[in-house]
Amino acid sequence: MKNSKFKLISFVMVAHVATYFLCGFIFMHLLGYDDYSLELLGFRPLDEINSAVLVLGQVVRGILKGFVVWWIKDSILGKKLAWLKLWAILVILGVVSTYGPVPGSIEGFIYLAPVDMPVNMVLSIFEVLLQPLLFSIIVAYQRKKKRDV
Image (cartoon, rainbow, N blue to C red; front, side, top):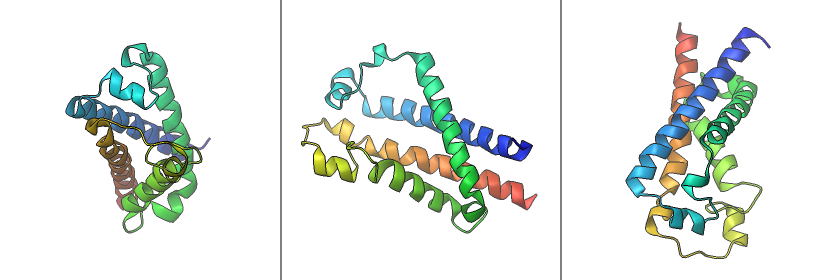
């Protein structure tokens, strides 16, 4: 793997992990996620989640995103509104248009029965939208800065 490819994938991985945990921490405290609310959506209780597996999972997701960013970098990064284009790709493919029925997606709207969710879980959509936004801004800014040098 070329040095520049490794650097970009590593940077994307770090940006993903950092924004994931930052947004998770902020929204967990801001919206007061609790085990009952999370279990309504099929999540495990927070004390059952292995921290090492959680971190490893986010590192793997970050590396996978790094490969995707590498593949599309020439057509998006360094261009006008790169952060917005990258964010739109992430939100459209990763949130709204997933291949499985998850809450907040088109498939979820079609196939999932309505669940009486607490307001804090409904508002968690802001976390799901903010994390890729911060990620996209950081990645696009880093690539623009790199090209300007």
